[in-house]
Each structure stands twice: as C-alpha cells, then as structure tokens.
Image (cartoon, rainbow, N blue to C red; front, side):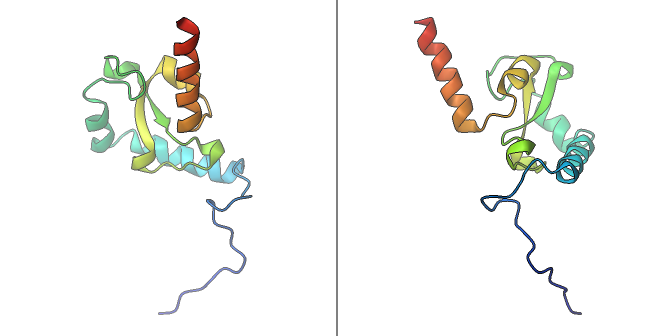
Length: 112
C-alpha cells in the first residue's frame, strides 16, 4: 500500500499561511457543529461554567468558542473548544489567548 504525497502542500500552521480560506473555515465550522451534538460537548458544558469569566450559566446560555479562532489558524479540535458565555464570546471575537489576557488586564487597570 503506497501513500501519495502532495508536493508543495502548505501546512496550516506555517507562517504565511492564509487562514481566511473560506473552504478551511467552512470545514472547521462543520466539525464544530457536529461536535456540539456529542456526549463530549454535553459533558463539557454540564458544569455550566464559562471558560473565560468563570460565572455560572444555564447550559443553554453557553456557546462553543475556539480558543484560537478559526480566522487566526485555529481548528475545531476538542483541545481548542471551550464553553463560553455569550458576552465573553462576543467580546473575545478573533483574539488569541495572549491578546484576550491583555484586553482583560486593560479593563482591570482602567477600573482602578
């Protein structure tokens, strides 16, 4: 059994890869939609806790968030998906984890 190699296939995690590829994003969104209907996701949201703010919510009020957003090269793998409240998910948008932390720190500093 031989394997075919694709020449010049670009790895999605290589610098310079264009992550706003509509086919890539559509495929990853479908994978996320499919994961929403699994026992794994039901178990993940069962505590009712937002990954970002830590507040308690009804499980119907939690959304699925990509820690590393699809537009920034993230994938719909279980390790990259977390439950988030609608407010945190909307504020985080396409920020990377380090950028999200900086945003939260700027809010804390402006409140003081």
